[in-house]
Amino acid sequence: AARGSDQSLNCGCTGRMANLAEDRSELLAAVSRAGLPTDDQFNDPQFDVEDEAATPLQLLVASALELLFEFSVKYLTLAPVYAVTQPLAVLKTRTLYRQIQTVPAPRFEEVDEDGNSVPAPVLTLPPVNWRRIRADEGAPALWAGWNARCLHQALWRGGTISMAEIFIYFPGNSFLGLACKSGISLVAWTLLTHPLEVVKNRTMAGMAGYTTGVYWGLMRALKDDTAYAGVKASLTLAILQAPVRFGFLNLPTSLLLVGLLYPLDCRATLGQLRGGQQRPAASGPAAGGILSPYLQPAFRHYFSSNALELIAASIGGALLDAMLVWLEAQARPQ
Image (cartoon, rainbow, N blue to C red):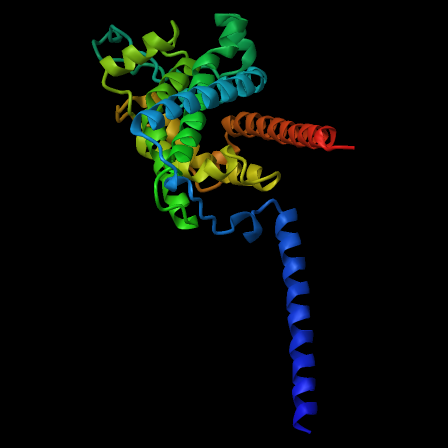
């Protein structure tokens, strides 16, 4: 009787374990279809690279070569995509900049016949659109800041990846350790490349002193002591957008996250364009409620630009995976 009871208990436990395994596989499949990473992608890795003998000079040379390689790859892959989406980025930046631009006050005060001052009429700047930019500044103005944008993103992404990979040569390569090393790399390169981001946004906005090249823009920002304007909002945005920029999330989850972070993107951009000046915006994106930023014309340009970039990245990743599979099949012995 006892053996029969044990057998029935074992059968019941086996059935429940099978049901749990089936439910877990269905849950992981649903999470994967949603574009979220599963625990199979986050196994607790333990690399033994720190046991290998590597002198400081070898690590320095490896770091330089790794940074050069990652920077070159990122620049060459991002440049064509940004060439397509740059007009949308310029329109979004100039639309935001128009919110903090002011009309110059008249030099002389008007008075009536009795000597009383006459209130000056309220002047407003015309809305921003690509036709006006092309008519006033020429078609190349729609691609203003393209080189600075490519340099910033390539250096930020390549530097973050390179530093994180070099950190693998040091102890502490558990999952938590790798997460901390990746976070340190992300923060460090966000701070290092922030002046380039400032120059990029000011060049796209057409600000005086930033339309003659990346180098002179950097010199101008450093001279005015505004190279790190808006750095807090930019650092927060970089951390929250990291899963999208480094390909940890797939469509449509990545696009949804980018859309939710738009108010923070507005804050970071306006902080960089203001340059530390505390001028109130005429109609800032935060005015008028939570949904107000999403009703601004700048959001349409922002969302369209990011959608094109994420779709291009998705297609490029699929083509790369197909090419790797084909090369593996060709290399396999017949």
